[in-house]
Image (cartoon, rainbow, N blue to C red):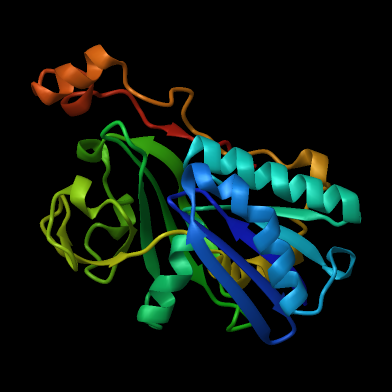
Length: 263
């Protein structure tokens, strides 16, 4: 399979190209600088793999949630490249891209709570459970809890997982959740293993074959980012109130999390 994958949903830019069993990777600075370096880096990596865009089976992108600017940049670039080459695109949840690194760390892992810093004292989170697969290089992941936006104090494990000490927590929000690196004591009192990682294009490559087999690729114009939030930043007043520990929504909100639509 010939694939191009990219992710700029966080402060890391990552690109990966696959041709058969070989993979070429590039990582750099994301954020506001991603738009400057993304297309030249993509073209350079394709040249290293001796591939043209028209030879690809699909273009894969981390569609969100994540940085507003990063998601817009990645989706726009993938749409432009795919449209020009008449190639399909595959948008995958960035939280799902946190699951393959857990399997690399622990091949026996079955359940992953994926958590990313959403800024404004909130986190993006989703829960995934590995399913048996005919292809060990592309495991199937079942979504137990779809991507949502949470206050850390409101984030809990799925009910069926709460007595399972083997649950992994993966992502970059352990500081917001409040425990030391490597272990996190969740609301049930059990210590959970934590893997610090970011969404990565190489993980998207591992997820892509199963998603393509399920028919999830779309035409370039149909690709949409997954934002989960309409607000980019706190106002000055809200920031000052939060510093004074007087922002009610940061500690006592009971509103349900916003979740991605499921089909």
